[in-house]
Length: 595
Image 1: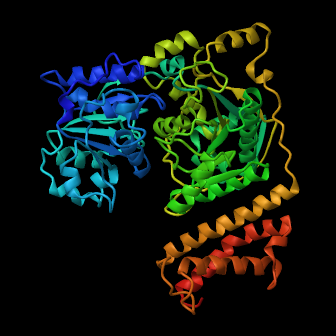
Image 2 (image 1 turned 180 degrees about the vertical axis):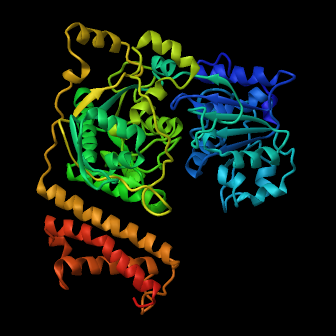
């Protein structure tokens, strides 16, 4: 058992400040006779959480540790940090252990690559939460209840109360340390366990571990939309846009999903990307955008491509091979923007993400912090204030994101006093409505309102996080009688060529057909991998439905001999408009066995 040896931690300058401080706090807590069994550690993105997990068993003097990751991607990353033969082994890289020390034996629980003998001879076992609390947990039944005496949970805010109970009851005597970037779970509840250590965001910015953050909030002087209650068009000012964003879930969805307002968010995000690229000379900087669902991913990707950006999207329904191809394009710097719907979560490490475009709704602080965290990783390590270490968050006032931004600035007690000294108070927003956030579409979801037009859009700077010059600059403007809104320049629409729009529209049509094919088969209960629909039994059902939808769309728009390559932009618009009706027709025919 290697965890009883002296690891080089407390005075190891290769470790980051929060790694050393949290390690000492964990050790001190569990040395107490009446120590609580479960504790929590809160570290911002980029502050060395994976490394802290690696050294935590030495603070506990553990016999055997179970490390729980939220998904397979982070499970693999943790495995690489912990395995003795890995080129990225943390113990070796940070000189926590010497060549003469016994490195812990690590087993990664991966289907087809692990067995019980591997687990029984391991010092550290790395698994994802589905293998602990889901249907894949059969291997746990073979282990004694005292097999693990330490459980380390990465991104513990993912764990619902039910899954947490399964873990704690399965190994009732194990000490538990939860790690996260926020103390709240995704469902709004608190992460289990007393928080014994928290490293404030501003300390991380000061040390150069993460980027300085700024936010751009888009405010129209006038917005025209269709009121669902009366079916009438309404024209409202900026204050009313804010109020409806705070209280009306349908309105918030309309803001992020309607072409007019979504276009403003996209344009401002591109403008910010071009600005930081020009200021720094670094052309690898990129946009990450959040979306509501798969169809919204396609919509945002199309908007970005129509404006000349290389954009791709990932979604859990796209399949691992498709998503991995997009990830590889991102790593190879073949993309300017990546769009996702709750897909690029914790542990995703790409420091060149510089602009966070908020295209979705965040009902709770935790998922917002996790999304913003994707742009927080510093490009130049340990150099606070470096031009490359800046991140920008772009959102619309009508999406009620300003509340999340102000929550983010104050989400830990340790931050509040420092914020009061460094920056003016955040803008006060009174939330007067209680809503349940759901995706539009099936299952009783909320449909977005139809935004028709917005005028006079301005990008107003929110109070920044970690910018020591912000208060002085704002005071200079105030002394001159200029408000930040007055100082902000009118947002210029980026020009799109008709060719760019047509190519983006054609690509989006293909993506939508693929999406609709999968949804249709699911609704009618037909196996996508079977061959029951093709009369010749050659094509799988998914391929047959997709091809049939393509054929019907082409025929509807261009006739029997239609050539989509030569479709005009108007024809492509007509194809998009016709697709929902065509899907319903084919779905009804499949239900009746008449296709």
